[in-house]
Every structure is written in structure tokens, then in C-alpha cells.
Length: 251
Image (cartoon, rainbow, N blue to C red; front, side):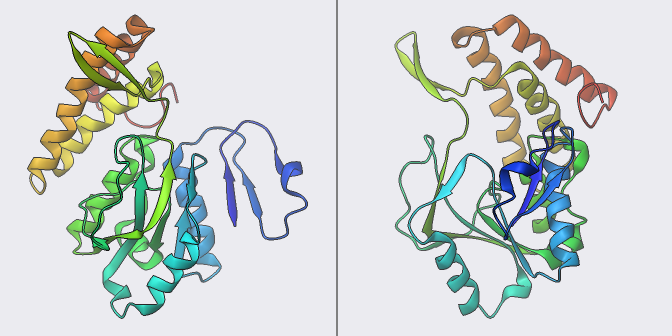
């Protein structure tokens, strides 16, 4: 297990009793993309073929990891598969599909088995995104090269997806994700970069991405707390996109 720590302190003492954990401290928040690349490159140096990528807010049901391994052992087309994903059970997607295998355009990072040869072919995760849209950009890069992304619905991953809550407005019920202002900045900024980069290949998806951004303005304005600060950071995200600003905010 490679444990990539993006916090500002050394937490190695928490894991001294675990012989199967290799603790890698960054001593600052370098972003999710950088952390993923550190783990992937470490695995490549250790001659590993497939790497399981996990977030801190996710957990497999039952024998999910073993089922994923068994699934890999039965496939004879692994060179064509870039990602094998579980079904992400969230507040937005609570019902497990009846079909055993799906073919989604994009998947979230947590719980994925990533083919490290495909990872090298696309040049890894885009570190300048820092956070938000990192996983989606990675998937679209893989798709462009003709790789398969498989969702194995027999394996279920419980994924928290932030502090969602239901709120009513003018008689309708809406889901609020309650992302903080900085996260809102990255969502707005990076979504516009995604639109520009991939629209020619995936116009329907890219239109949906910007549709979610517009919906975010509505949700923040009418339903969430700290709306002035959040709206300011969302505007800042758009202005930074127009200026070509990338990487960590303030970095």
C-alpha cells in the first residue's frame, strides 16, 4: 500500500505498525493529481501492472477487492483496458445496475484499478488541474487513445461525495453539495478548461459539464451558506480561466 500524504505534517508515526504500508509524505498539499502520479510512478518502479487508486472517503462492500482481482484474471484483453471501476454507490447513484458490466465514458478515481501501461501512454494525471476534473480529464485522454473503461457493477464502492443535503426552493427539492469556496473555484475554472480541450471529441459531455457549472451558481445563490464568498471564488475561477491561470490557487 502506497499512502500519499498531502498534509503539511509528518504522519508516519501513525503507520509504523503496518509493514505493508509505504508512507510517502509531501509536507504540503500538492493536489490530488500529483499524489496519484507519485503513487503510480512508485508502482511502476516496483514493476506493478495494475494499481488500485483510493480516496479517503470510500470503502468497498464485501469482498470487492478480491472480486476485482478475479475479474482481471479472467480477461484476455487487458492490454486494451485502461480502467476497471467498481460501481460508485453515492447519494446521487444509490441503485446498483442490474447489468454486470457497463461502458461509461468517464469514472471517478476512487476504487479504480488502473492499467499502468495505459497510464504511461497518456502521460499520467494532469497536475495543473490540481483538484476537480482530474479523473475526468484522465478518462477522456484514455478514450482518445482508444482504451476501454469498464465498470464492473458486481463490485460496489460506497463513496461519500461531500456533504450533500436536500433543500427545497419554490416547491422543488434540490441536492446541495456544500463545497467550500476554494473547491468552487476549481470546479468553475477546470470545467471551462475541460470544455475547451475535449469539446471537439465529446461535445455532449462537455456541454453537460458547463451545465453543471451554471447549476452550481443557482444552488449557491439560493440554497447554500457563505454564498458571497463562494460566488466571489467562482467568479475568480472563471477570470483565472480567461487569463490561462493553472495549478494551485495562489501557488
